[in-house]
Amino acid sequence: AEWTPQAGWHDARVTPYAPLTLDPATAVLHYAQEIFEGMKAYRHADGSVWTFRPEANAARMVRSSQRLALPVLPVGDFVASVDALVRADERWVPDAAGEKSLYVRPFMFASEAFLGVRPSQHVSYLVIASPAGAYFAKGLKPVSIWLTEEYTRAGRGGMGAAKTGGNYASSLVAQQEATEHGCDQVVFLDASEGRYVEELGGMNLYFVHDDGTVVTPELSGTILEGITRDSIVELCGKLGHRVEERKVSVEEWREGVASGRITEVFACGTAAVVTPVGVLKWRDGEVGDPELTGPVTQQVRQNLVDIQYGRAEDTFGWMHRVV
Ligand code: PMP
Image 1 (cartoon, rainbow, N blue to C red):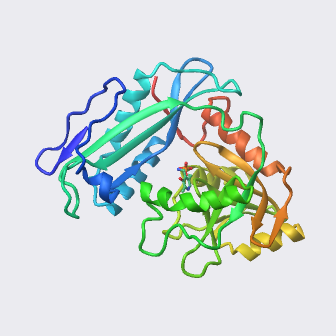
Image 2 (image 1 turned 180 degrees about the vertical axis):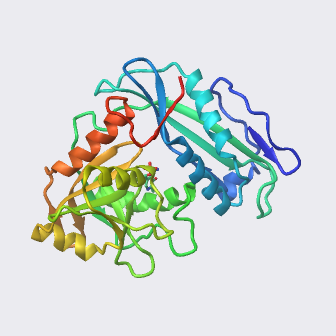
Image 3 (image 1 turned 90 degrees about the horizontal axis):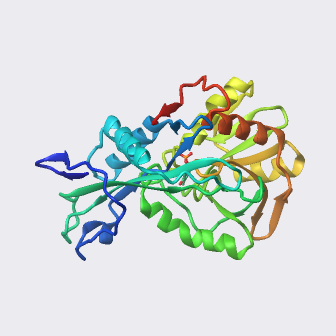
């Protein structure tokens, strides 16, 4: 669909996948005025197709649009656009685990050909999809994490809570640093004190304590408000775990794992759902067990995946039927 101040949203349609033609002066290519979402559609054993909390993605896109001076796409239109694309897509190929899902990527960008720095007067909204391969083709394997002390992801008043490409552009060198140190993922600390754990490049974090408490860094305005993160807060409540959303310092993480007060660490996001964290590495040390996949990590993952694929009752009302 397209948007202009005069016409509002218009021209919504489903078309065959094809390259875009863009004027070289298209605003997004210069000033990165764009936002996106990431979600999945799941095909259940009975052939029905569902998405997971699409209104939450829609609401996050509204918040992102407000931060990036983009027009608001109404929640109902967002959900309808995803439904329409998922209905049109026939590529239900089983992944390595035998599950069928589509990764769905709605995105909105400044499409006016204009080199002045101001909100674009023409905006485009598209949704694309692709079959989602199993994130863990070789089974659930813990990821290793590099603590970057050089780069931060977002500061106060910045764009950290928005799902916008600039955040990912700025995280690429940090991810390269992680790879150079033999790690799978990078973890960012807060920009003001360089002390509190924020999130990974594309996942939120959870810490399981030996007293059974499950802790996740609080939403500070600088981290992405993950829908998986939010769902796990609710799910843990139902599973009888005490959940705390609060600041978690990197010392607490290191000392907690070293002393056994923290028994499990896991990361979460749409693509991987829940993934165990093995080792945390930094410039002159490391802590953790590269093989650890703890019981709470497995329980949370299994419960979520079973709801998503329709094998467990959705007592939360999270699933939205598409087909
Ligand atoms: N943080 C970042 C930076 C992300 O890109 C993602 C993936 N969208 C997440 C966290 C997890 O969010 P969600 O659970 O909504 O996928």
